[in-house]
Image: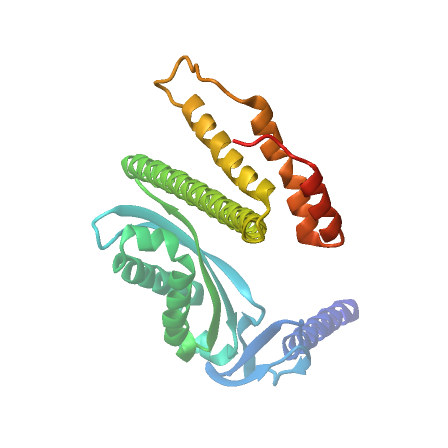
Length: 326
C-alpha cells in the first residue's frame, strides 16, 4: 500500500517537473540575429522581440510571427506581356525586398511574399505594355526604375522596403527574332556603307587638296621663273643699253671702229635672220670676210676707251691701225 502511494507521488512529481519545464520553455525565448518575433497576448499583438534573450508571461503571452528582417530575394514568375505595338513577349524578373517593420509585415498583409509577387507581376504588365518592342529591349534600366518606384510606394504600408527589381529575360517570338536579325544586319550594312562613303569623301578631299597644293606650287614656280626671266631681261637690256651708250659715245667722238662695229653687228643679225628663214634653203652671196673681221676687231678698243686709262694710247693705235672698210 505504501509502495503504491510512493510510486503515485513520484509520478505526480515527474508530471509537475515536466509542467514546470514546459512553462519555462514557453516563457524564455532566444531571438536569433536578423529576426524579429511578434508577441501576442490572448491573440492580440502587444510587442516585438528583438535579437537576444526575452521572457514571456506564462500562459498569457505567446509568439505570433517570426519575421525575417534581412534582405530577401524572390523570383517573379514568367508571364506574357503584350506591348503597345501588339507583340507578345515572355518576361520574368527578380525582386529584392527587406522587412522594416515586423508588426506591419505580419498583420497588415496576408502572405507577404505572394502579395509582393502578384503586385510586381501586375505592374510589369502595366509598365511594359505601354512601351514599344524596341523601347522594351533597349530601356531595361528605365523599366526597372519605374517598376521599383511603383512597387515600393505600394508596399510601404506593409512595412516592407523594395530595394531592387530586375527584369531577367525578355523572350520574343521566333518570327520576331528573325525579323530583328534581318533588321540588325541591314543596320550594319548601312553603317558599313556610310563608313565607305566617308572614306571615299575624305580621300577625294585629300586628293583635291593635294592637287591644289601642286597647282599652287607650280604657280609659285612659274612666278619665281618669271621674276628671274624679267630680271635677266632687265640686266640684258641694261647691258645692251650700256653697250649702245658706249658705241654712241664713240661715234660722237669720231671713232671709226665704233661705226664699223655698229654696221657689222647689224650685218651679222641680218645674215642670221636670213639663215633662219624657213623658206630659204640655199644662201649664195659674196662676203668680204676680212672687212667683217676688221669691223668686229674695234670692239676691244671701244671697251678700253669706255673704262678709261688708255684714252691716248687708244687714239694712237686707232690712228696707226687701219682696218678694212665696208
